[in-house]
Length: 335
Image 1 (tube, one colour):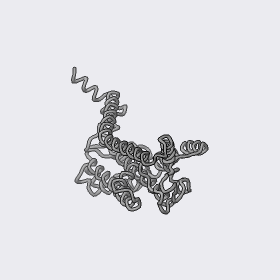
Image 2 (cartoon, rainbow, N blue to C red):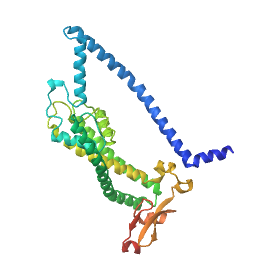
Image 3 (spheres, helix red, strand yellow):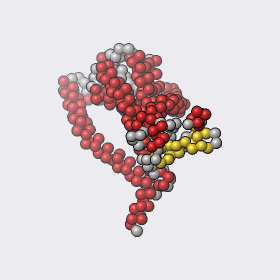
Image 4 (tube, one colour):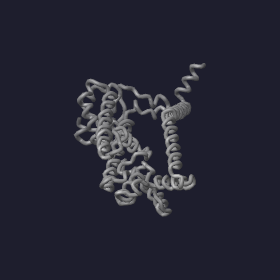
């Protein structure tokens, strides 16, 4: 009886969903505990340092009262939170709301990165930001989807080429994993490692880890806002720098979405299948499977088949997505 209950819990969709929720909150709690352990000592040291500086300042400047200093600090912090730095006599190479800066801000809104360093100051600006985001975020998602669909054409061609070269040696799943690793390598090298090296050179206060951290946080649209390129007071060509960063973010996010698409096209790696409202028999994948075209009317529907050695050797693969309707040319029908 106990074994039947365990089998039911392992196969029932609702039970798997609750398991997923439990794992998710366990992951959150574990991450929170690690962050607390790592960051609490640094925060405590920073608090003690600020207290010491404040005490020494009041001791060395008896003409300044504690209330006056408190009010001054609040003004400085409020300005910094709005993107205005008080260093170097509140002087910046360019204002925060030049066209290049505004374009950078607009891109962080529609891509949902949202650094939070520079924000609208006026009531009209806040209202327009809401309307701009309501229209801009769906438009951006449509643009990213269209770009990824077009990039999937050469990406699939690479996969088919791998099928033709390696299909007689390896299973479909192994070739798909190799294909995923190639796309992942391209993303890491050209959109993480190389840009991080460039930012390390351009940003005087960043080390390589800071720059790599910025690239990852930005392209994953987390956007913490603790590191933002071009925000130093004496940054030359600040507007141009912001525009270049804007295009980098758009290209990088597109590449990341392409990588995610390739990942989820491998059923064996798509953990979401285990939590869908389907029977276990319908979502269990086998490594010895491939997608074989089966004729249905005037189009071809690709379905999974077993023992794919012959087709892999021939390299005749048209799509590796399940249940995709695609037209077939006369030449393909003859083969």
